[in-house]
Length: 98
Image (cartoon, rainbow, N blue to C red; front, top):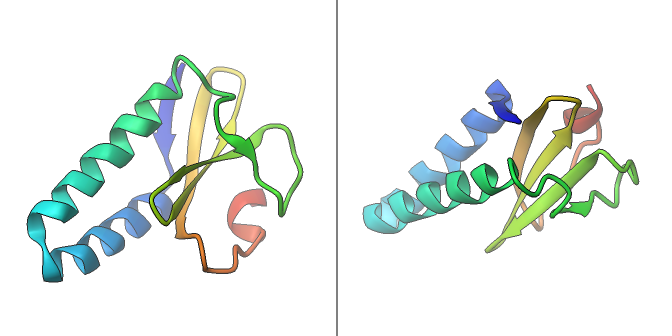
């Protein structure tokens, strides 16, 4: 299985890391590395994340890391990382169903 990152997900990871880096560049780098490591583990365990409650679709899932939700879609031969959001932010459903 391969991993595909949407432009939105890449933008969100960059923005979050930039925000963290204002106070602690090392923490930002560690955060990014952990996000990518967690996503890479989906190649072996694609259903390890929970179903996103806002959609209730079996193929749209999320990993929780710290205060963040890594939202992805399981497809036939790939995993698409759709977005990364802070857990307290409202998830616009169009970000994951588009």
